[in-house]
Image (cartoon, helix red, strand yellow):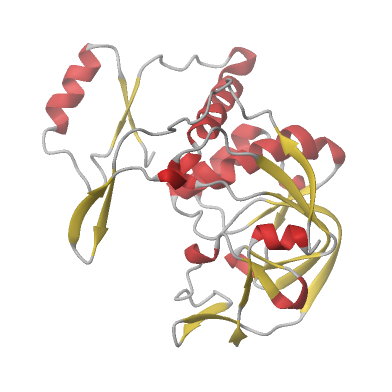
Length: 273
């Protein structure tokens, strides 16, 4: 293992480690006048067992977050960690906070408070590839916010060109989403437990989880349209997402609340299903 060198995405652009192919506008659903709060609610955090609340600060205010298509030639990806390595083994800084260095399969370890990378030769792979996973996206919220937009972009823009989508360890809901999006197995590259150097690697710029409201909404509408296309079963107009089979943050009176919602035309859905 050797200490990992981090590189912020802005500096990577300036150093020409990666190039910006284009800025996407397809995810923008409506014109907005800045400043605009994507979420006006306070956020709740739990730190060392204590609950406290914080209001949105200046960094959570954005007119619209630009999404860019970034390209590296070549570009290296680290195993199931999904971390992108640039020249001189610098890693893009944005997703590193979600790396599971405690995972036995991870190529990273926390040593003396710093992230270290296992030294290994990179396996070269020819062709055009698009990064379709990131650290932490086994978590549903991270996947919906940061990975699903990338899958939709790949399906619409890159799948017809013959490019392949790089995926990590897909769980059940991710496999179902790939099937729903119509991305065939032949278009997938399942990332091995190796560092792979792709001849041409593209990806979306990191999406801030605090400012992703418009994009997640656009993704949801697009998937709903796909699910109901071709004479499929229409989706209910009102859906209640239940957490009754989840061990944390459960509602004490959920059965009563759900009965009231059903009375008003909501269809209960268990997220785990």
